[in-house]
Length: 200
Image (cartoon, rainbow, N blue to C red):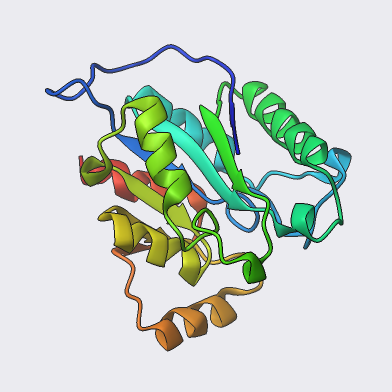
């Protein structure tokens, strides 16, 4: 499932073959605190530095696409409409600081469903790449979990690990257990963005 974000002027031309670079971002634990099955948009908070980081990406011509697992829908904890309200509020909060996410794609299924759209599955990424004419080989994935890194690896993306505040040791142990080595590890979202941009 997907939805478009608010418009922002493009700051740089497309790549030679007409496609664009993108930074895919996880939601819970990466852009905002993970409240475990967030259902109420009014509870949404955004980590410090996230609006500035997203604005920097947009200013450098990157599309910003949020890809998130939302099994709370499949579990009956909240509805698809609730997810849409959260994403609308997130973009409204970002817009207040001159930032915007281009689109949101989320998987509503439980892990038991065995779908291809739940990360580390790659269906939502490839769908976004088609929808937005993205060049995956020139794109990146920023997330706080091993499943984010694995999804990025499967697609040949630059993988960026930003551990959730207060759960860094657990997240790193998860990476080690899965045998994953992200290309970049950063202490915050904004610093992760700066590392991505430094690589051109």
